[in-house]
Image (cartoon, rainbow, N blue to C red; front, side, top):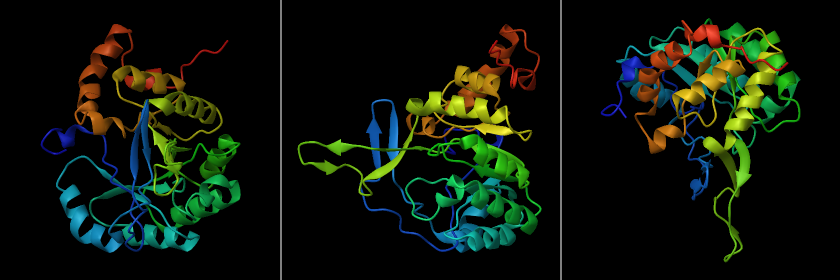
Length: 274
C-alpha cells in the first residue's frame, strides 16, 4: 500500500498478528467474498517473532506512524514471553493482544473467559511498559464482562470487534468453501454488531474503546465515535479501496465542521438514548 497511501498520515499501523514460532496457517481456501463482506480463515500464517524483528519491523520503523504490534500465543506464557521480548524494542509503540481469533485453536479461549482474559492481560501489562490493547471477540454471550475483566487487569484500551464466526458452502458439491470449514466474517456486514459492542462496552469501562468492523467511510467513523469509540481501525475496506483511510482523514475536518463540532473527541460517547 505504500505506493497508494501516505502511510505517515495514519494514526498507527497494526501489522498482521505474529506468533512466537512461524505458522503455516490453515488450508485453502482462506478467503471468500460474501454479499456484504469477507470471510477469512488465514490461521495466523506468519514468519514468527524472530523474522518480524529482523525483517519486518525495520521496514515499518521507517515511517513516522507508530507501529502497534499484534501478538497471539497458544498459551498464557507465550503471550507474556512475547510481550517481554518486544518491550523496549525501537519502533514498537504498543501491543494489541489478539485473544480473539476465531479460526485458530487455542487462541480464542482467552477472549471467551473473563478470568483467562484478565489473567493474560494482567501478566502482559506486568511484563512490559508498552501500552496494551486487548482485542476482543464478539463470539461470546457477555462481551461486556470480558471487556471489564481486561480493563480491571490494566489494559490501556479494548479493541472491538474481531471477526464474527461464520461459514460459506457450495451446495452442489455439499462442501464448505473454506478449508477450515468456518472462518471470520468482516466488512460492512458486521458493522451493526460492532456498533452495538462499542456502545455497550463504552458504557461499562473507563478505558478507551477502539472501534473496528465494517468501517469504510467518514460517516462510519463518526457513527462509531458517537457510539463510544475513541479511535477506529480500518481493515477489510483496505482490500477494495486501499486509499480508504486517507479519504476518511481528508473528509473528517469538513464533516465535523458542518455539524458544528470543534474536535473529534467532543463527539465520542454522545449517543442519546432517552
